[in-house]
Image (cartoon, rainbow, N blue to C red; front, side, top):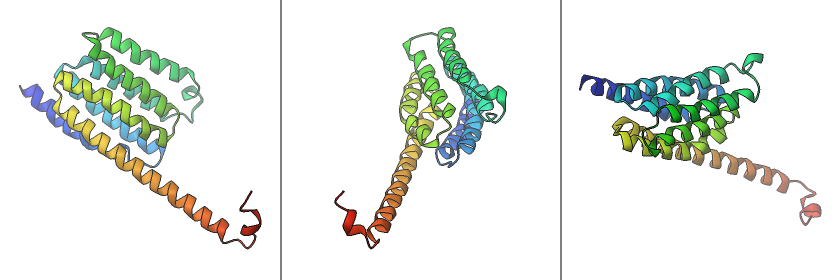
Length: 191
């Protein structure tokens, strides 16, 4: 019982870390928040006996550590993409209890691809299928903090995408207005 209470407390910290992940504007800041999140979730899942969640969180810790060092030659290249995808799949094999144990591995593969690309927009979009996989797994292992986390993550990702779309629309509108204000606009608007 004490372990479950401790897992819940750590899960609360994990929820807090995940809420701010998708509000980050740079890939580096997103990865730093994700690293902190994965450390917390690894401990949480271990305490709950959710070994598939624990395994992919550990893969995530290593993944973020490598991706944060991409400026160094040893951390560059597609080999890391392949290594982390393979580790995610192997983790599902070693923690297999039911088909539900594939969900964290699927989420991890999507995360590997999103973070490897170092593209915050892609990571924000991939948050949706990743969260749906983890939400299903959390329901399966009765991780209440995991369920809350995925709900908050989905809300945070939705807000982030809305902000992104509004920003892009403002940029498009201001570009259109700049073009329209040109004196020669009438000459080439029909092209």
